[in-house]
Image (spheres, rainbow, N blue to C red):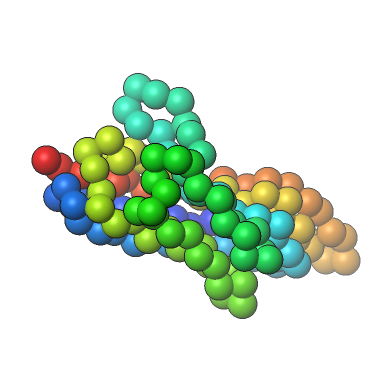
Length: 123
């Protein structure tokens, strides 16, 4: 199983970016996917999550600005970020919870992190 995060970059205050998290491998199911971020010198924090049923949740300081969406057929989860602020500058990570995958005839379940993608918002 592999999670590939992409879409980060440099943007000015008020701008937009769209992050994408793509899961690949012998995946049977994924319960939910979350986007996290880790600002410089701070701990990693949850930004938004979405279940395979489409239920989304956001941390308060991104509500109304960020939108998380999933394409279950493609195993991708996107994070549309609008009205970006300097405090949104972070390395963003995606995490898949309760990933069930197969190796041969055996099934395994685990949580899986993708690599980070840098988002920098300049003022």
